[in-house]
Length: 293
Image 1 (cartoon, one colour):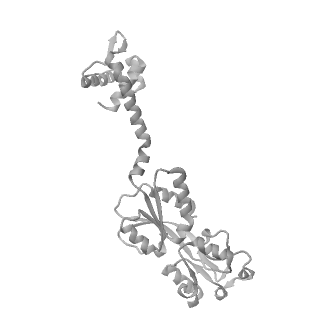
Image 2 (cartoon, helix red, strand yellow):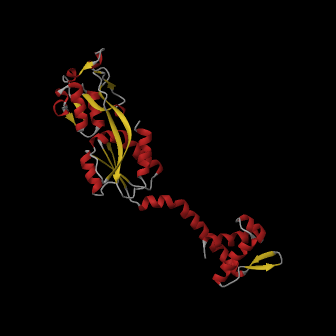
Image 3 (spheres, one colour):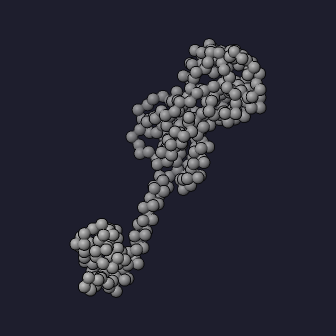
């Protein structure tokens, strides 16, 4: 017995003739007749009485029809819920995010899951790239969204570098440094607290090339933490200067340094190579396309 045979049985019972039922299920009449005959042979009882050109359900057919309909309804329902069941079976989606990516993507991810994927659990871990990579290797995370400049290429990692976003030194509105009309020299920043997330060696190299040894983050950054939102709040309430992704702090004003900073973060999606991807990673990838712009 197959679902196809059950559909043929129900179609014939509802249509009342082989010709109408055959048209409904897109079969020839002989093919439909063979399908019904095979079902009757398997069940060991006739389902229909052939009365001339008409057909009528036998007592056994009348008893079998409701059960056949229930089976088909259950099969259809399972087909509709299959994608959700696959997501639930996959377990919680565990995503690691670097500081910049977290500032841009964590809230959109949580909103997306709450609105459209409420049956899938999601866990977001924040931290430095090297710690997140180790958690990925230990199977504690399913995917990472990090700045590629802080990622060391390894054969066991699969990295998709998808989005580049400009970095900037930023301050609150009304900050004294905004009075500079011809560009702000880097040495002027040193009169104020400089706040930043942990920066990669590549970013440190760019800063030193642009502005000299005093721009080394190990020397000039006085406020450092993983949460960009905390750095932004500090800058809004003090004269601190924040170095971060421009898009992560729209409420701050960008300083026009002389020379220009011209540095960026290159965000990528990282998973383990040669491993089946968690179904929820596709959601993260789509959110990156929408929000890391």
